[in-house]
Length: 313
Ligand code: SF4
Ligand code: SF4
Image (tube, rainbow, N blue to C red; front, side, top):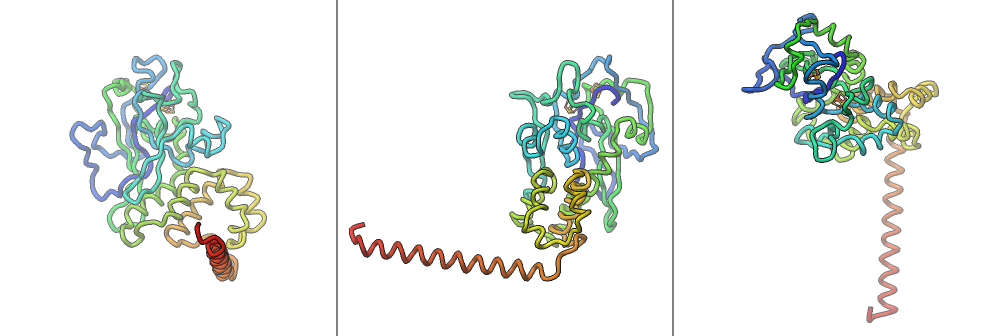
């Protein structure tokens, strides 16, 4: 849409798709796949009778790059953005953490909609940019590649489908500034799809992996601190220039966080490790465990002594 957007569309990662799109009866999704150079009929402008209607009943998934854009705009850090403007949900039965855009209290309206339209328009989320298109990453059976498929979402409240304007998917994406969002979120989407489709070969992620997924997806401020931490520096061999670039460029940091996630979830080792780092880490963990055991043994001894000194306690 050129003037106003707002979709009840869940965008981003979806279930792997192995056949034609099969939309349920009465679904607003048109069961007709579009590719980049296919045309569709749709127009949206400020004077349209349904202005803002799409932002009044939302169900929008927030993707990692959406957070970077919105947190900068609102001048808050990533944790504060997540706390104030999103709601958590689980993306799959393993509890992969997802986020949805918050609605106003006791309402289905987007927290950012005003009478004049979207208050964060230049930095609106990717799903809002796509509407009234939806997109899916699909992986054909036995193919390692994830392809993009588009489809029209026709909801009764949206009168844009009655406008005579036609455009190709490619033109619409350009007009809505979708390309940069797609490029920034693509690797993350592929990680989620791979995780979902890998089934028992990858299996249930550990609690630590889920925490790392949460941080690497939605909290770049904490991820930056994590990279600076002695624990990370001890294990990974990043040169000074790379570290400097990651500290000063959040877009690069986000892409790096996806590499890190692939390493954690799938063992795809693209970040070099320091020689002997694993052994050093194991030795440190062992040392700590022994110290802790000694501490606990000391505490127990002290409690026994106290009981002996005071047999009535
Ligand atoms: S972020 Fe803006 S465009 Fe998206 S639903 Fe909210 S008000 Fe509408
Ligand atoms: S409901 Fe459709 S036509 Fe109306 S403002 Fe929203 S996107 Fe545009």
